[in-house]
Amino acid sequence: MTKTALLALGCPEFPVQTSTAIYLAYKLQKHGITPVFAGNKSALLLVKVADPERHYYDGKMMNLDITIGALSTGKIDFDFCFVFVHSDSGIAYLASIHALSKGKMVAIVFGKCAEELTEQCKNICEHVLAEPVIHNPMPLKEQIDGVSTWLHV
Amino acid sequence: MAPCVEELDYEILLARTTFAECSKLIQKRCREIYFVAPGYKIFNIYLIGIPPLPIGIEGDHILIAYIKPCHGAFTLKIPGGGEIERIRKELKK
Image 1 (cartoon, chains in turn green, red):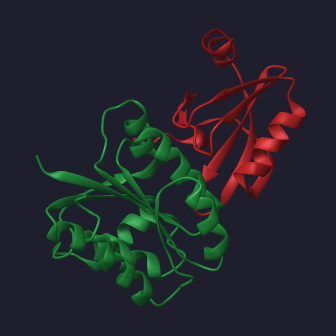
Image 2: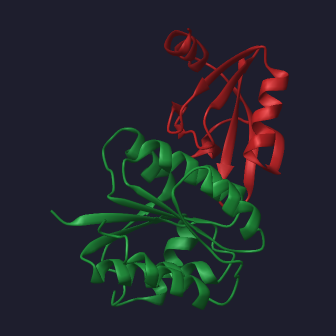
């Protein structure tokens, strides 16, 4: 059965999120893992509009609150959960998804408060990819490239 | 359809802050408090936050922390209706 990965998006106020999420989805697909995007309407539309022919993602899109509901009732679960974190709200979603999913958790931390948030993420989940970036996706891209070393472990 | 807090007649006690601040306010204001895990459903909302999540009862109202991805955490005071009795039955130790 095909493995699935949740990509839980935060508020899309920082440009680096959408680009990184699309790149991560592309890399996951290369590893035979189906990405499922979850976010608010704007976060999902930014992905959808940037990739109209679905070259880089071929998975589903779900409203973030509906995803939380489906996880809490056991209707869905994922093999991996990547949660994008750049604020206290992101930490709240990370902690909630960690409590509800049996999947391997990964926090992707970025933005102005990355350092402080990274410490909080480390208290919640094992894998934390963190860079204090807002516009430049390259540092996070490099970290995502390294994910393939433990993705199938 | 996504669960929507806008369908509720809520009062905002604290806005655009952290989950920890909202949790602190609920625990400070309410004598009757129940703690639940993330994903607990109250009204039509699945609660989000760093566990344990407080649900406070103040008179005939319920206090919860509500998280919005773009706007932070809010403490909401919502008319309890039948939810107060349901919570008491479900969560009473």
